[in-house]
Length: 147
Image 1 (tube, rainbow, N blue to C red):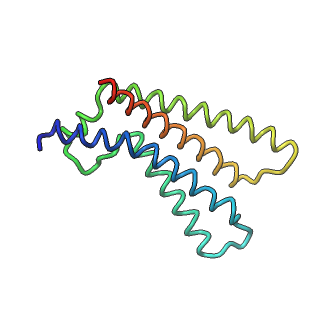
Image 2: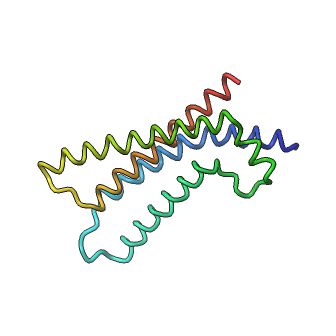
């Protein structure tokens, strides 16, 4: 398989997987809010928080770099064309706007009910990362369909 064919196959896979990853990320957050971590948390709770943080970092890195870290530089370059860079920029814009909208909502909610800092961070990061992943995935799918 040539580098071009490999890049095309991986680009299509990425366009399908990013929205799925975003939905999995959002669903995973339900476990955090259902089983809220109290003061004096157990070791398993720290592991759960650490796993969430690692997943958040991995998703941000995948979105920022396009993933495929173990492929050749040529394949990564082919996957990161002008359309992909424009789609990534738009995805970060949507992620930022989602995060700011959530922050305004949290500010409003905090006037009536206390919002823990950890909860606020989870909400903001979840909305920002998920919105960016969804937007990027949908834009890439549209570009591949129209291309």
